[in-house]
Amino acid sequence: MTLAATLMIRDEADILPAWLTYHVAQGVDVFIITDNGSTDGSTTILEEFAARTDVVVDLRHDPVHRKQQGALVTGMARDAAAVHGADWVVNADADEFLMPVDRTTSLGEVFAALDPAIGAFTVPVVNMVGRLARSGTGIERLHWRDKRSSEELHAIGLLAQPTSNAVHVGDPDVVVVQGNHQVSIANGGEVPDALRLEVLHLPWRSIAQYEHRVETTGLAYQANPALVPSPNHHGMRDYRRFKGGVLAGYFALRHVTDTEAGRGAFRHDDSLAAFFADHGLTPRTVPDELVDAEEARRLQQFGTALVERDAAVEMSREALAAAAENTRLLEGTVRHLHDTIRGLEARLAESEAGAAAFRNRRSVRAVTGLADRLHGRG
Image (cartoon, rainbow, N blue to C red; front, side, top):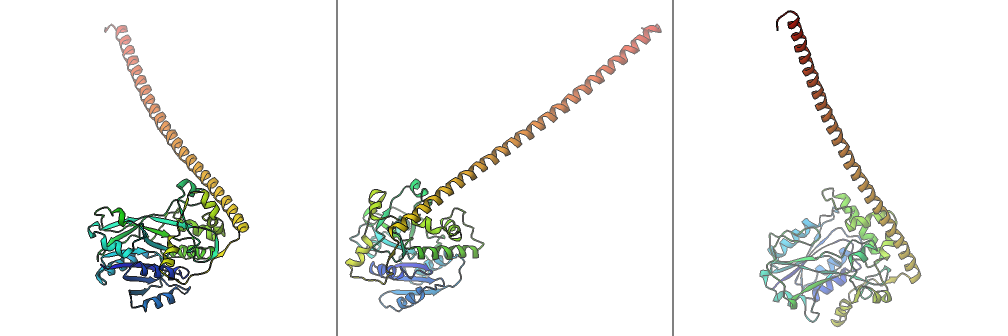
């Protein structure tokens, strides 16, 4: 059984070494990686990784920044099967750590036991959060599974929990949808409970990392007019916040201290850090530079005010939209009444014209009759 992972990456040097080390240790055999014009040292890390002989590394370079993930990942996923003979393919991001729910087993063991007839299936993605930091990889710091409800997420300026990722059998004709959440291969059955997987997701590692990511994502979307994300797309929402100079306030609301997490909808999970420790692995990471408690509190207060402002603006927009719709309906009603009145006026005019003609005919007959009687013709 050959397990392949695809990765499209740009500027993820803070977490890339840990991602590579982790997935090698978990049993991934083939890595097909496209470096999307990194400038932060990620390219050097990948070139060093490509020199390894214990795994197959197919390293590619695409410096174009046009948010072309769907097309590039599709190409890599197809080559995983056609070129490298992969039985199973995982399409991932550098902040996503695929892990068996049963922590006593490995990815290699899970995929060796999976029935290929399953075809494709989705894997839940869990955001990991912790204390707010200016910089740092956060492998040990981000140890709380975020279980907040949609309502709780809305209160901090987020829309929803992340969408599940798709995993699939090797297929030279597969199509991977932008974002890696769907593929063209149908699901052919359920994954047994003992073989279930999940993704531990570390998207918010530090203020510096996230601001850079948001800026590059927004610029890439702007460079590709063929892609038109929704105005509520999380990346574009944060890009607008970044351009407005207020992203740090929103970002701070996504993080919690251990005390806060213990009182909220979070569950402690240090399995990622434990995996490295248990396997004697020490990947290169960026030390955490924490934001002190007082400044974090101020940033969160600022973020709360921003979210409340956004809610008020949204309510105003909804009220204006409702008023506009009511105006449109009233205008339609007025037009209908005008049309009805014009119709009634036309019918009244016709009736009056008919009555006048009738009266004229009666008058003519009466005069004719009188004339006949006067002349003795009756």
